Image (tube, rainbow, N blue to C red):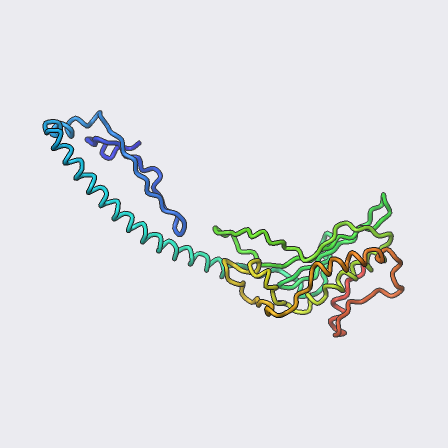
Length: 273
């Protein structure tokens, strides 16, 4: 512990924990302890006084000490307010520096691992069909997630626990590529309405997911409160009912996504692999 004055101080001062993290924390913690090696000259004039006189001086010192403490508390309260402003400004910068989400502009694209993706600023659908030689089956994995923006290296990250998945299925088995492709086309047909705009409105229940530090990310809008969102449970029930029919032979002509515009239909059909 450092001494207040290495030459003649009669006490040690421990102030190692003092510090400040702007916008987060301020620490002032001082502990003092007696240094009898150098206390002699300081205590000598006091021990010649009466006990009552020393006690009176002690009480007066405590009073002054408490007054100084009260002043420090007022300064600490002022720091609270200013640190909160620093924190708010930091979060505003995080909002402004949050990068735009990557997407495919509602067009199907395949990556180097053979995974197909179609995405926009709000939704992302991905699927992969793989062949398992040992079982002579085709495995289909697919999923639709919310393509929410991610703020960079935040000091104030909130983990809300909201699921990013709209729907998904993992390693569903089919006897042929045609049957597997027919299945994934059916899944896309159910959700193709999510891929008609570059920035579809955000469902109200996902507002936090698309917000940066409590404010909706730039360029997004919320779906009107009275707008009927797809009932996920109803869709899941429908998928379960369709599963039994999925194994049947697909029609001679590959089904197309049900989109009114011919130009959009060419983009939105699931690509044949």
